[in-house]
Image (cartoon, rainbow, N blue to C red):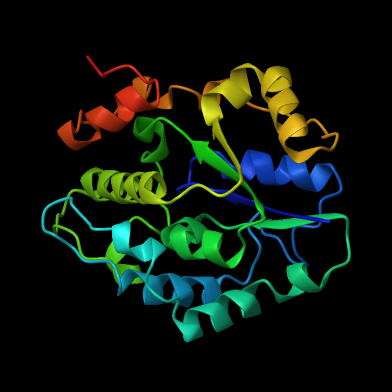
Length: 242
């Protein structure tokens, strides 16, 4: 019996993998929304806020995530996560899991609670990821301190960087697979092969939309080339905006 979770900031392509797992017979929770999220999400939202209160903000776009691998996990956090996952954990399906982007906001504690789970991490070009609004755009909603800005795209870009840095600082569990959304769309069979080998099970095929890649290049509003995203763009294999 395997437990699977999909992590990654909202609008990173997690929906495509959730739909793929669901189409493959993986139990993804009793109630899913159109994005493939396990709902209702409020318990996980509250848990994420408890985690955030433990993360020191060093000013600017610098947070200290290192201690989160060692500090005791808050008892209320464990209780809320267990409540959120009750239907999944109680289910007797051979393969089961969940998808909720806000899971990423407390990933170091999730991996400690479920060290044997299978983690699928979705990365997407942030310039596409920030085009549409998401619940995590304003990190203050989850108790995260960050530089205030009235620029909506900048706020979303900060949220993307925070979650990217948080994932990078998380000690990786035994079962971890990083998947780029663009690769899944443009080379679906190849990436499904990687997923099947990783999970040890056959997977169904869903329809993907090639026009979902590189939307930032076709939008009427120019997406700023935020300096603080350049390292992440390079590390993830994306070219610069210039």
